[in-house]
Image (cartoon, rainbow, N blue to C red; front, side, top):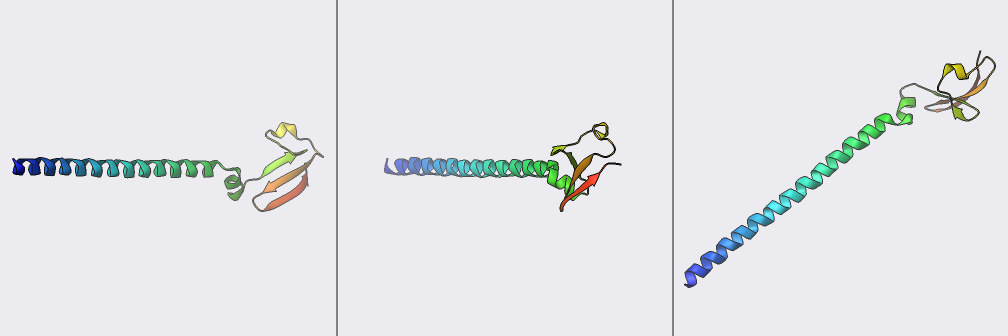
Length: 94
């Protein structure tokens, strides 16, 4: 009887150890998955950043402090501000 109890106890301990390893592995994989999704989202956000666009050589044209999105919104003589990756410049539309 004592040998049977020890075997049952050992079997339950092995079962508990296996469950523990499974929980630890699942948690680790869950954290890794969350981290990977976070990195992908951060990279997407970075790619969409207006600062990244400026870094690639584009500029934002502002008239009266508002970004201009259509050429038709500008007329000859309009004063605008060009926002570049490194600094700003004023310009006049010709």
